[in-house]
Length: 312
Ligand SMILES: NCc1[nH]cc(CCC(=O)O)c1CC(=O)O
Image 1 (tube, rainbow, N blue to C red):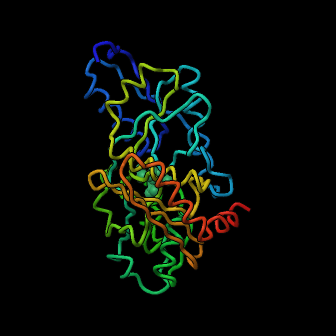
Image 2: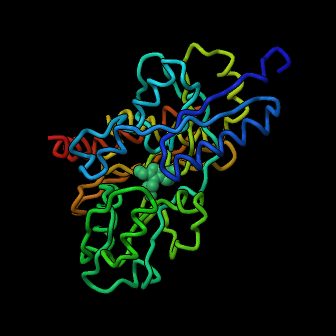
């Protein structure tokens, strides 16, 4: 790497939520670990997504909502990279931008969080569960049709405050966010993939930059985690074939056993009355191919109709 300028300054555009700031600090620490003479600065900014938190995201369209302002900052030279939760990153990037590293995945599973109950099974009939994710909603409804699902929005801390205020008997959050914000003790029960298949890319952090910053792209390779990248590539390929945004009842979860990659996908009706599943296994070089294969198997089962009904 002696030909690369490792002393350059890298500015990280980030949203201001606790989790976004944690992720930006994490990438900063990783960069400094690999390039001790680099200067890394955070450039926190408010984004459109933060301002419209009270509006149901599905109705606004969802795609790319959180990242526009960060890209403008990179275009205007106010920032060099943007750090994202992979599950919030749309399949397609705006012209001139790309995803150039995916860091090692944290716990990818959903978490059952409650102050009074130990597990989903332990909830009394008709208990109120908070989540605004159609993916979580359809899977919880399938598993426990008697529960009442109530909308829950805001950052991780806001959602926990609403639980603590007694608005819900339990809420569902991503384990990764709680672990990163040092609130792992809030997890009463991790939800296994056969109860709640995670979202595409859940638990992984990705780094975006301009495609013409070749030196930076090379420097970022040190932060890329190959196994995570392979798994998330398969999951995203499935989503792309399904033309799914980030606010859809779609689950996609890949595992690696050596070089053997297995992908499971799910598309469900939000009311939990119908959930479609498909799986495929292949060697790791076929990540994108099995994403498409699983998507097509879901489409054959009728996933297209379920998704179309939601977009209308
Ligand atoms: N959609 C919000 C969001 N985006 C990323 C995470 C944290 C987990 C992750 O990095 O995948 C969360 C919170 C949640 O779903 O509970």
